[in-house]
Length: 567
Picture 1 (tube, one colour):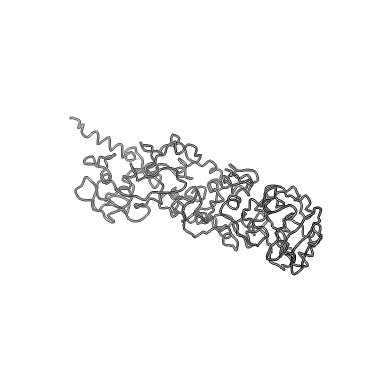
Picture 2 (cartoon, rainbow, N blue to C red):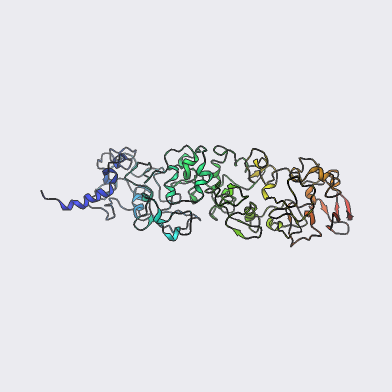
């Protein structure tokens, strides 16, 4: 019998395109929803057609596109994924991705094949029905495809695996591009969703995305239960956040938060999907709705991306936290909480730092030279919206943030504090129920019942009645008995208790910038509240320090003229 040599290329092609059907694996094409014949197991199938491979391949009369493609190619155009964090150049779909889209963009009839003069009649919908398998022509909510994954992209980026190090069976196409086939094998559904490998703990994702601190971070190790956003999963059913891994926050297809393929419509809502107390031990969502909060809006839609995490001019959780590193001991300076791992900032000198050296470096990133100035709540003699400048070590006076304070004599300090001690912004600005002060709430300046984001009560209204509660913030570090004994100023009791003048009437809690004040006029954080303290009859409003506890005041307060009052 003569061998039919014309059949050999066809047989070789079939071997190439049907590996799962020929290698003894259980998950053959005919057993998957990609079998669109009448015998197919899915809800989308032909009315009577019995051939299985014909919906994609033909031995004769193909489109000329490998592998013996039996369909017309979609023409698009497609809306392409965009993100400010994406460095690759993504264009219109090419290669194998275009073959997949000939069904999965819903524009071409499923039964429209080149080898038949008439389309194959389908039992149900003629095109891919609505749902997560119909990607449409808007690919902005899908993982980017058809881009070169080259060393020029991955070099210098520790979060991406080098092209040569991508573990099989994840692969690039012959042009070195990421395509649908990098993650999906149309012939084998052994791992679910036609994935090329099991995605337990996001092993498929980490084939290319291998963020160094991720394995030791809080999200990668969390035993918390998977939240209600189960649609985010692309792995087998997971029971913990650690198992669900990337799928806890991201969706590779049909993501509501498009720029970063987020499981929620924006960064904040995605974080709050777990950090509302349903998965996390403490509810951040309960903090950000308090009277004073960090301006985080959970329900807002994304704005124009302004950075890796920034959403326009709104505050997002990602402005202060790196979700891939949070909780990791890596990329962390001593004294910086693990929740701020791998976060950049601005130091006290105004220089950008890749990693926080102290917690306040994060605060200075926005509340220093940046545009996010803190609202001025009190009308001061000297106004300075740049908080970083208020803590400079050459200032006439400042609270000891970043450096020990300028005053060598502060007898009211509560042990173990001394004049050599330093504090941080979060010692005053924190949740009112923060576990950092022995309460049960989450630590961090997310929200407080006390303005402005204060950990304890701090009354600033004139005629406030002195009590441990009224000035609880001050008494957190300064001994109340010492203040009322006049250890540091001979008329503290008279002013604070008898005359009912709040601490804030005379003292600015941050500091006085050296470019605006002097050690003679602004020692001891003196910066008067102009709504309480007014110029003297001679028109002067100042405190003159002579050192050693001696000084003079020129002012009018509660109708009493000091012109001057000598201490």
